[in-house]
Image (cartoon, rainbow, N blue to C red; front, side, top):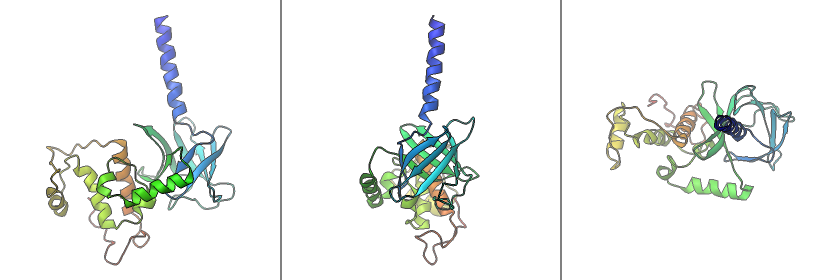
Length: 235
């Protein structure tokens, strides 16, 4: 009986895990620009969501892969609604350490856009975005998921500092002299014995989002100004 109960408990936990990574009708996801609401999940695999402005986003569940989706064309949208993304790109439903969000990934794997699961309405979401934009970035980079609309308006040079500060908080030892000089002046910076840095889900996602925005073609990053588009130093 005890063995049977153990088997049932394991099976039940497996079911919960699967359900926890399945998008449901009525779920709402905010990406910093738009609040999307899931209108239907057709045949259990096609997720169709819209905004109050009638923008559409459609995902298709990847067979045999828990929490894996891909971007597909919507009914009335010929172009992918996510900036610089393409149909067919992978979307991972991440539910880890209290974080519930969709991560749109480039073909090589880096997250380039996120959509956070939220119970809030549109006004509340926009209010939270405004609070983020007014925050000191040093106060939020390791404890709050950032988003691309926020990062779009930050100069590349500052993006580089933001990304590397996440590593510096763990004592990462930099190769670039300017980064060593910059972080050595921070009272909290304690160089580690090695660079085996372990990031949590928020930190890792923020690093990838910032890196993706840094990689945007010069002139297409809204905060680009003359003389601020050199990407030669990638540390």
